Amino acid sequence: MLRDLRLRPAFVVIISILIFSCNQYIYTPRSKNKVRQAKPSIILLTSIVDYRIDQYGWPVNKEDFMNKGKKYHDAFNNFNYKNIHFKITDSNTMTLYFSGHIYDTEMYDKTGISELNAYAGHVKFFRVKDKFGWKVKMY
Image 1 (cartoon, rainbow, N blue to C red):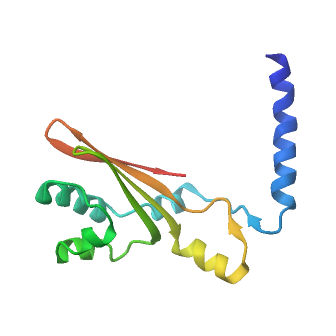
Image 2: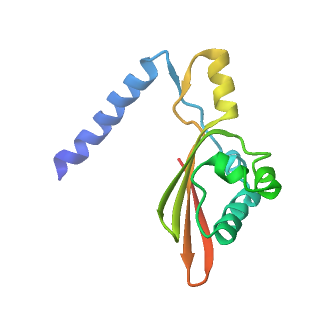
């Protein structure tokens, strides 16, 4: 156990040297407020739950969701992510993965440097008794 404690600082130093010596990556510190602002809107999350209730199933992809009506199409108006993936576990559980924040892709286009601390995350939708809820996790 004492050996593990001595190796951790060395491991952190080695990883730091490797990360900071690369010219293709950058790490931008993100404040909690910026991360909160980058989360998907409550309007979108509520619309996904409404879709599940109205259509008796989760959306398979973004196009399927948006083609079911103006209400669902408008939910994606201020969605700031280019990549979205729906993973359906069962009729009561689904996970929505999102990545490729517009700000991060614009910075990559300008600089050619990938952001290690890019905005991304997932939303887990679940059913508790007779109501649906969600939990957002940002990476």
